[in-house]
Image 1 (cartoon, rainbow over the protein chains, first blue to last red):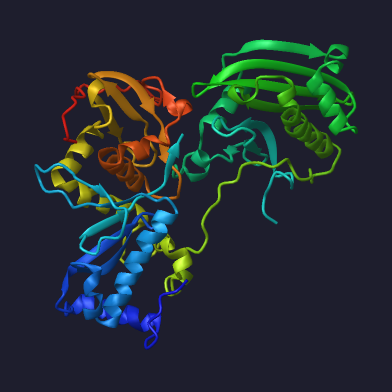
Image 2: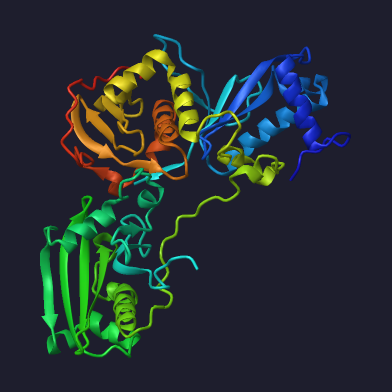
Length: 122
Length: 346
């Protein structure tokens, strides 16, 4: 399986998305940057994606923004296929109880998504 | 040539069956150069103790057996002609017909980490001064009859004895041992993967790139994430207490509280203490099933107990439930802070 963006290579899309994140010049429908953290040997790799209200506004995004969103969706899909727990959660503020929520489907509005690690009984 | 049991670099001290998976075998090996023990189990494989010698419950048990400190209940002891009539000895002789000499067998029961095990020790005195032994430990819950142990004894104990006899006779290569448990490690880490395009088939391997070019080690990165998602106040509380409590939603009637504990050295998985109506009743053993830093595992357990209690508890079977203080290995740890159940509050 691969993500198809016929006019640009994957590397070019990745570079352009990284530049956009650094410069902050997002399409108007982008709410901000969301982050997926994939727990693994790296001790969490953050993957940025453009947060949008819903996938209905996908056509309003630039190619690299769509590419980043596709990657984020695929990560969540792959995690669920591998039975990795996926949660939307927020960094905590003082005095607030943690309120992570399991994600069944990719939520393009989520600010923080974590792909938790696998556990077993020992 | 990589060092291995088959190449004669190690001796087989004991084959021990996994308590959770029938006929899945860990080998406790002794390095012939250093005498250090190793094990195939995930706990030993993934344990990083710095400069100290790595251990697991299997190597510790083997050490206790070697020094005769393991309390046991004898079942059978026979040697010579009496041993020749034993089913397990006969099966071993049949599988290894070249092994001649005076056989003896000892069987006893003892527990490893609260799991009852039956140990079978075969000895062969070849008559020319060679005494070779083979030790096999069966998880009793998987082996209710003597017949069910035949393959394990003949395979593992027979192999250990044959390897020792061969080595003494001047043949360092012992041949391939029976099939044993192997931890599957994911490949594809290191500098070469940094520039590799990530295909969607292995997209989750983004989490396995050790060098992200951010100057942090995986352990530091995981600790930062833990701190980020706990917030300063809760993180400080965890650092101070070495645990955080999670009130159960599923078992609200019994006012169950999970005490998610953290190893002070931030290396090992600690068992989750379970309280009912403030009484400490059990330990749940939930361990890493993939290669992640300890902080990631701790955060996984904590977040899932809060929001996916049923999911995280689904990995806890009867044999993963232990009596209180089951992992207080060095000294008994009694926390003075009461475990108070609070509705919908962690």
